[in-house]
Length: 402
Image 1 (spheres, rainbow, N blue to C red):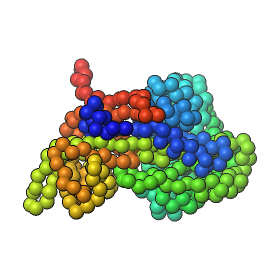
Image 2 (cartoon, one colour):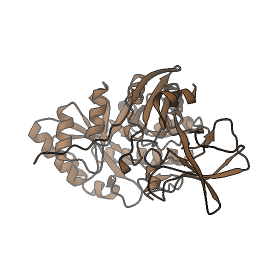
Image 3 (cartoon, rainbow, N blue to C red):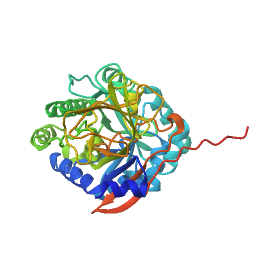
């Protein structure tokens, strides 16, 4: 792939996704999981239509966080039966819409939400299946983003659910499974196994209390490099230990088991191309002003919600060397720093091109794309070295009559 040609044809900055790499990641993950496990792709990490269609062809199921993601999947021919809706803040109207369009699996995160879902299904005269998302205590300490085990907006505290378990045994809702998610990007694979063990143990306990479970959502947290030149994490050691966990599941043959993944499936596939617009020196520090910034990468760090990643910057015909620069983005914010110390083997000039690897997950999707109303980069999907999809998010405000 000629990166200079891509920028010449589609502008800068621009995202490239290699769907062959997604295929390899999906195959690796399937091989690392027990037989007959089903993968749920988290749409929030990359909602590109070409990526979604490709994962659907590979056999993936999907997890959505709102009506808009659900509509995107339906538009791209994903069957509603392969979609799980998870969110701590579901609204009556969006759940109504999704159920009327075929949604049949919802993860319930609070007792008031359970009552809302029951009332809605009663009014529609429909029965749906739900996962109960449980907030289970965890000793997890190697997650880049913890989402369970402590006080949280996510899920029902296990103790609260067990105290109220009889409320979940009747109505127009059938509790088909339990769901827990301890954290994202867990680098210690033993902790992933421990988390699965905890869910299995709780599932068995709930069954002994009179709720027959048909499904277990065992979370995920599979790690992947981000905006760096690091290689993919090796997961081969997982399978044997996870299979031991599965042997402890009561009535295993009657249960469908899910694992969630976002970044592991797509992170490696993405490359962001950018250009140097200007070069300057301020107070002795050389600056490279680029067209890549928090509007298209690392939006969370730009809002100080997370620490900025190291963002390995790769220039054409250059390796790491004695030249040192501060690479910044184009926005009117002092937080728009792509990398505070870029070291190169040659001098960098205006017009030079660079690229950032491993940004296929939480690259554009977590960026501040509406900040300063800048044009959103195009996204190009390649498969077998051929372009199969080009898309672009258009931000346009329309006034509403009142």
